[in-house]
Image (tube, rainbow, N blue to C red; front, side, top):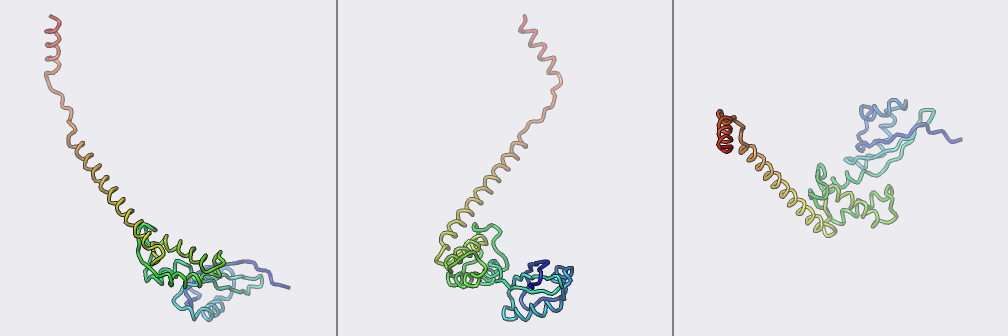
Length: 201
């Protein structure tokens, strides 16, 4: 009879670097499994992927034994690794932070294919290309010209917006400087009364 799974936990851990300390211990400790045993098995299974972040799905059974399945590293991680960058663009496709080759894209797509909703490498490449675009990573010969144009337009729009904001600020300062202060002029009422009396004559 198959053992009943009581909990499934997903973790992303650096290959070959799992230890019972946080965050692994924090997440798996309450599940009651043998942390040292998990770490040893995970590290053995991932030693050929050193340096990668490896997602892992752990199935915990009612008798506190466990199994785990390794997934492929996140697309974002693989793209940053190939592009040799620490992080993606804060402005998405409107700012290119790196360029990779189509061969790099194909290699990542082949790695990710088992975990993607895709049947062919070409479909997987399209999915990874979308992730790359959102991170500001262009693919040479595939979308680099289009993204460069988009980034240029976004930069010009930003410059125009900053210019308009500066002009608006300058106008507001000007208005503030030109606003007359209402100082009551003494004797004005008497003058008005005299002029009225003159008119009535």
